[in-house]
Length: 234
Image (tube, rainbow, N blue to C red; front, side, top):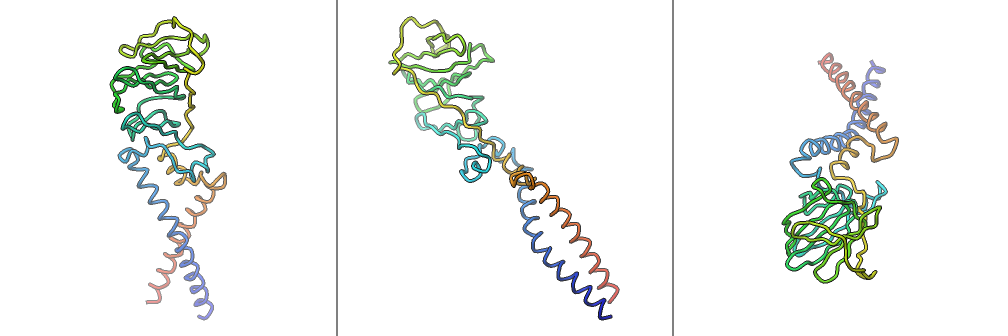
């Protein structure tokens, strides 16, 4: 009787200890699982990760933020966006220029026409006949020029219809804007996926998650054994 009592006491003590640890694990798994299930509804698949702490874990730089009028734009690994609204692929931001009552935002393979307050009026890209990609953008007065990759040809842009024609004048070096490459930042959904699977903890992270899952099984079995013993005792 004494040995049976101590065996049951030992099992009960470890059942409690494992339960405390696994409570945190289950909270972690349930929390990330629920958020992943509703990631599209919450816009997490479109929201780029900006936390310096988590970006450092990925070895990446934060997205680039800039304003056009009242609108804030974000350039990141998933392209160009304003708020949670994606505007399309943009691997390199060539610059933003003021043309009459409009603003021209140029990427390596995309051109956007904006109002002075930053509202989108129209855009075009290589899929709609834009002869890109481009490597640089120049602005002088109300004129905009783009330099093609490869040929190095300089083309003058008419922002009203996005037509391009060969430049007829030589531009000074000061007219060319410095391009900004898009940092490769993952989405918030990707962060949740890596937290849920343990991949963010390194190569041993998934193994840790597997061990904790096995511990849940041990907890369930030990709970069943304790309940069965108590039932027989009653």
